[in-house]
Amino acid sequence: MTFHKFGRPNLPLMILLQPSCLRWDVFESVIEKLKDEYHLLVPAFPGYDPDKPEDDFPGVEEVAGEIADYLVSQNRQEVEAIYGLSMGGSVVFRLLTDPRLHFCHVVIDAGISPYQMPYLLTRCAAVRDYVGIRIGKHLSPTILARLFSAQKFSQEDLQYLQTVLRGMSSRTIWNSFESCNNFSFPAVCPKTWDHMVYWYGEKERSKRTKELKFMTEHFPQIHRLCLQGMDHGDLLIVYPDLFVKMLINTLTINAPVFLDRRGRALPQSDEEIRAEDAIRTSSDSEQTGADT
Image (cartoon, rainbow, N blue to C red; front, side, top):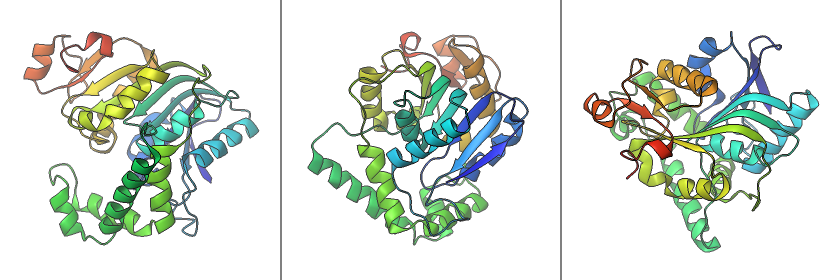
């Protein structure tokens, strides 16, 4: 696995973990804004690395293990912050089980947790996801434009997505989705973190049901933040400037925060936030109006 590094090594360490169907360079738009304050470590997952097209994605557990071993080998077991989107969030979940590591701040953005249902049903779900991506590999940017909002994604974005999809091997597709939904997780997780938050988009809330249940069981102290008006990965991919403000804010204060799309603080009132179609973030204990 290739580890891309940015920022001075003596700065606090921040790890950024990519989702499936995108590459490590999905973070390019935020690296420049973060590297002066943090030493950034951005792994290029096997199977998604354009410099190593022969590699396949081995699975969430294998990738997490390799990242952990690398951190230990570099004497960087103390991690100031780690962020993972979707499949990257799954890798974060696994890293949290490694007692050799310690994370001051953990941000999981719509991370995928293991299914908690019979084995046969998990196979059916993996086949469904596999077939969907196999079909997506052969779609043109024109057809992709019909599936994704033209207001959010440019033609260049869709061309990038098509390139990544076509570069994914069958083994990478299968291992990505099968392992995200079925990686092993201990009944009792060691306390390797100080502060953890789970972001999810308002428009994907129904798809995150199993994740919210998983966190209630394994991480009862986690803060769950609903990003209003957002879908899966929108904050990083569509609103990178706001993403940086949200991330830095999460790492510096542990209180509920309300921001509009320009990153300005809003009065902490559900009515005002909804009226302005703003992005709302708060702990579940204080967002009774958002999660009911």
